[in-house]
Image (tube, rainbow, N blue to C red; front, side, top):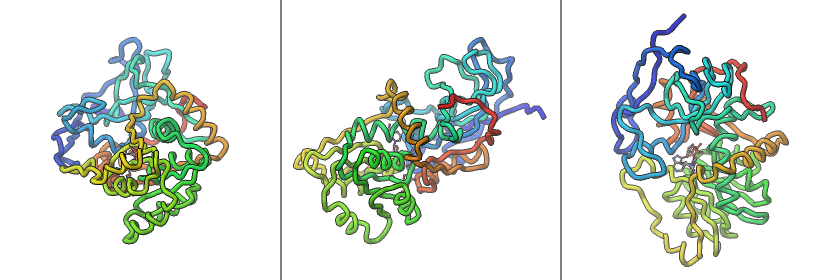
Amino acid sequence: MSQSTYSSIVLAKRPKGPILPGETFTTKSNPMISENDLKDGQILVEALYLSLDPAMRGWLNDIRSYLPPVQIGEIMRGAAISNVIASKSSLFPVGSHVIANIGWTELAIVDEKDPGLSLAQIPENGRVTDALGVLGLTGMTAYFGMLEVGQVKAGDFVVVSGAAGATGSVACQIAKLKGATVLGIAGSDDKVAWLKELGCDDALNYKAADFKTKFKESTKGLIDVFFDNVGGEILELALTRAKQHARFVMCGAISQYNSTQPQGPKNFGYVITMRIRLQGFIVFDYQKQYPTAAKDIAQWLAEGKLKRKETIIKGGLAAAQQGLVDLYDGINTGKLLVEVKEDNGEGVGSRL
Ligand SMILES: NC(=O)c1ccc[n+]([C@@H]2O[C@H](COP(=O)([O-])OP(=O)(O)OC[C@H]3O[C@@H](n4cnc5c(N)ncnc54)[C@H](OP(=O)(O)O)[C@@H]3O)[C@@H](O)[C@H]2O)c1
């Protein structure tokens, strides 16, 4: 059956608070594209899995940031793993699996020179979706955040917030691999149980009524490294438990992304009194070192030292809007993806 159109999801209205499915975005039907539309060096890809990322909410705000905002009428930005279905590039033949920032669209034409385009890196015996998760920017973020920014070392006491998410779960395990003692914080008892399976020495549910008391007990040795994915109250609490010269890895602040009045830590003074090194970072800063991280992560996977989980939302491109809203409600354990089209397992990536 030959289709005459394909769908994309575009930004319709900048949200003030949380994203409103059906209002923030709108679905656009586009005339079909085919091999005939390709110029030399271009490929036609069909999306298989879209990455859903907390940062997406920030890309909708018209403010100065590390990337320009998505414009009204523009396809929602995002990375996807795609299948090459037509090619005028010797680098990316038909049947290749590629990672590219095609956004929320079923089909796209990508130039082989696009800096965001690469062959998907799929670990031996791994899954195609690993290329977006543990071997994608998620894994890179955990790796560089924990090792370069956090400078974790054996004997450190490390606390990770958002610990059962894509980045946090890898960050916890990397800290363990380096000989640290790790406390993970997550939003449900099931997530807490999974964190213990991953090897965390302790894990706490921040939604439990006694969380603050338990947190104080669990951090009585004080924190060497705090890997923060959530900001807000948990950051405030961690500041009170920082050891002198603690390193605070400011990876994300998801608790604040939908807020119209973001909450700063009111006890920022601990940064001074405890001489905390509090450092933000963006994973792109480490782009040149991605191959080193990918090699280490692939090896840990092969040796069974690193585990990962993914939560895959079915329902095609149309499921992306609600999926993104649900990300902020913690629907996921591990990496959250939308299945636009099921992978038939025949695609070729770059096997590690
Ligand atoms: N700096 C960088 O370059 C970089 C790169 C990638 C990601 N990040 C950041 O890293 C963080 C994690 O990203 P990810 O892609 O790995 O997402 P993720 O952790 O897989 O998913 C987000 C998780 O955040 C938790 N959460 C939501 N609202 C929360 C709240 N109010 N308080 C505490 N936890 C809350 C939810 O889990 P619970 O059930 O536990 O609440 C949810 O599952 C985000 O802040 C993101 O912006 C930064």
